[in-house]
Amino acid sequence: MSPFTLILICCLFIFTVQCNDQNKKRLLLNDPDVVANRFNQLELEIQNMKSEILSMKTESQQKTTRIYQLETKLQSLSGIAGGAWYDYSGSAVNFLCLPHNPDVINGDLRKNPTYKDFLYGAEYQDNYFAQNMDGNDVPCAVCRAKHSSSILMIPGKTSCAGSWKMEYNGRLASGDFRSNAGSQYVCMDMYPEVLEKGSTDYNRKLFVGVQAKCGSRSCPPYQDNVMVPCVVCSG
Image (tube, rainbow, N blue to C red; front, side, top):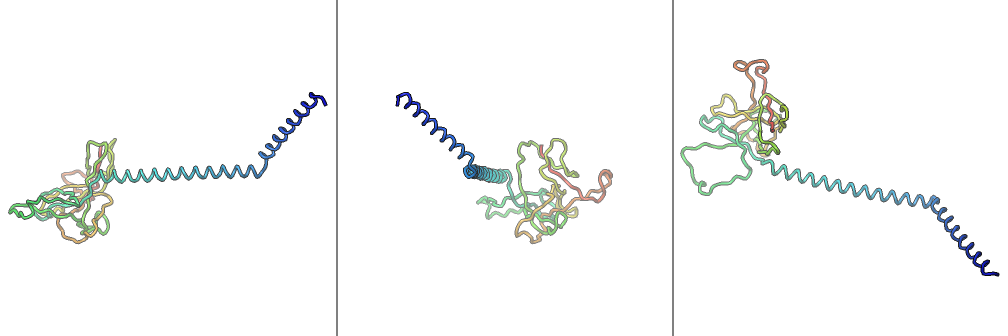
């Protein structure tokens, strides 16, 4: 056999082996078991990616909630509403928001001056603001309105005008008109709360609703003997 013939046979053999390998690969790619296996792998990878995305979303939501809680804690100082006794004619008129953790000046612990005023906790006088409120102590909060330079309480309105932002709305409140002590108008939240363990009715500083009266104030647009709403706006 000539060398040329031997080389030709070897080349044909190599070509045949390569063709057989290619055919095997084609058969493997078209094999249903292979396709199903690859599909299952892709499905598993997709599920893993979904789980990772869900975990990231949950972590992000938890961080957002925590940030919101911290912001709320920093921006709002909760306390106890208080003021002077409603029947002392010379007492201060304004409502106060007292902290839960008051400080005391050591030198004043034993002092009892002759001329003084008294500071009491505040209560809802009846059930006008919400059910089962009569006699309950009133909580309060001193809040910070972000990105605002002005805060305004508007009696007789339930919403803010123009670019003003509504902080909350509710019902106008003050002290009872028959009391000897003066009072002030404040806006009681539409959904008032109560202090725990504060249901004993002591009748000291009191919150009551406010009715509109006709006469020197024109009716309409106001209505006689109708309770007055209010809104607190920032801008």
